[in-house]
Length: 367
Image 1 (cartoon, rainbow, N blue to C red):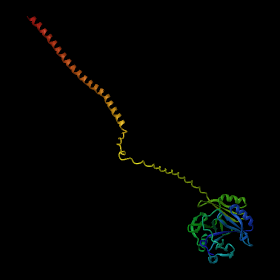
Image 2 (image 1 turned 90 degrees about the horizontal axis):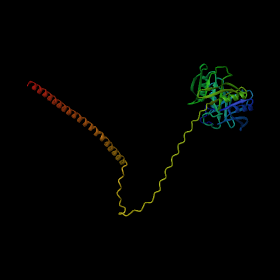
Image 3 (image 1 turned 180 degrees about the vertical axis):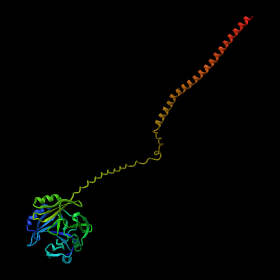
């Protein structure tokens, strides 16, 4: 049965291994998965992350190679298998029904990388941000990235979203739907066992997952290291040498809580209205003339006037004495002039008198 939004999405991760119990013990320690037997087939162990079931471990069939395989959704598995073959893919496991799961098939792309197809019985949850334990990224290592990208674009409708220059390693092709990135394709710079898809599991801390891998008997193949977008990855191998990877995002500090608004003051209660006094007769109710309000500024003005008068009184003697001095000086000069004239007259009179005496004496001598 076809479901909207399924075609081209990574829906399930399957692991085939010879030691299912050991795989369950190892991966639950590294990824935080919870393992339990699948209700429809107890020989199959189902792994669940924070958002629900994400992967499973199946016994290794005779002659099959161990390893992880990613299953990509399709609306019509038979039509998709036919389309894949026409584009150069090969069928490894023909389409078949799995009770309680849906219809599956296993193929290899034109370069030899294996992948699965899944037409689920139940509609999967809507695609969203990866939660801890879910698949965070899928990466294809292949000798011809551009040819591989063209194959998957034609088969699932994937789009090239970003072409990242990796220097000596060449380009890293980021693909997805719309603005949603779901994986990358690149050409390895060192020899590998062959083209293959690599699963990245979302974990709280990639560094801790790498340390736990070493402690549990696995190996760190690359990293831990930072990647664009604020993430951190580590490429690892389980105790049987099967590669997988982990991805974590740096913790973002929570914003400080917004200050609580100050409580609003309670509205004052309205005063209780007092009953009105009974009306008085008109003669008794004649209003009295209201006394004129006293001016607050009057005392100040009065005091200021007193100070002004006192100042004038103090200044009066000073002005009087000044005028007296002026008059005294004038009178003194006048008196001095008068005395001088008087002295001059007196001196002249004396002189005249003397001269008169002398002339009298001369006259008497002549006689």
